[in-house]
Length: 451
Image (cartoon, rainbow, N blue to C red; front, side, top):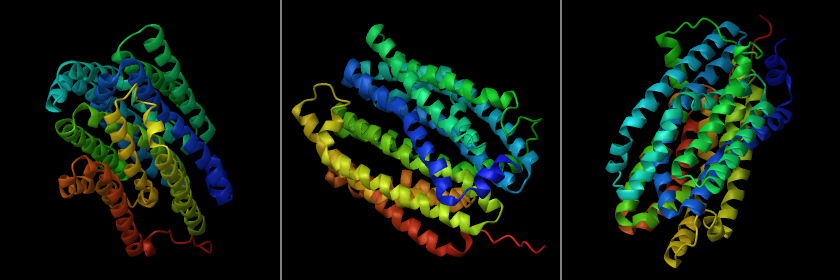
């Protein structure tokens, strides 16, 4: 009996939820804190222009990370289902092919970002010091791309192998390392914005090496093998990872467009406020993602081994946990919007403070409904219903925000701040419709024990 048979197949669902989802949420929150530290230190120590530069550049960095997530999450689904069917050979081949693909993509994207950085910032409308800072920041991530990107996939593979606490510990170490290096580089050495990116990259590379080393030495359930690439294998990985990838890539494209619009109609202050909102979102979103994503291997395994009751209970826990996290977040953001904003803003003007507080309160409404669409997307991904998950993710991250951008254009900046809440509500309605339409296909057929 394998570890997955015991852990994912036999552990009572509620106990499995706490064993997997809680460390997963903590780990994902910890991993997201490097971005939070980045924003706080840059805003407080380097000033508003540097903070705005980070927010202009980071969507392009995130697009690169999303490609690694495409393969990492995309391979995790067929790996989990293959293990549920006791096909370890197929699982190991998916794992090996995915790791090679991620490293190759990291090299290619690093080169692209390095050479295109000045043109990208010019296209955004950035000039002078703002553009210079953004290019410096982007090029550090480009240089470190081949090693940094594997860290996102490693997290999935550790969870598949049942190493939930290891995953959580490494994410905490990554954030702690970033914090210490940021303090050293920015406060002690007085280096510039490029050092902020370097601090994060060095921590990510150290954790990537620590996470992947046991796989190289055959110490994990998943093992490297002679890769057998095929269009079918890559297609399955890309198809399974598409919902998460489309969500990430579309969200960053939306951020790029919003930044350009905000820079044009509201100037640097509007970009700064949008940056604050994105940082707050990047605190809540990993908690949702950590709970939902951590349970995907368990759901995929039980779906593959045809245990509908276990799958159903795990799905219920995803939705319930998502609701609790989101509603608490909405209440906190609505109650103390200015205090949250001051984490990132050093001596803001009265106008900037007023704009930030108003925008944050409108943004808090988003979390009243976002949890439902997010949980539905995650569950559909786990059971390999990637088309419907992709529809939800793309609608949430790009299609609906762009539609509401046009509809709410007469409201100016208020329309942009309202965009998040209206998009989340519309996605929740769409998710409900999909779940109702697909209700007979959401659970596996029970295994026939008489054959």
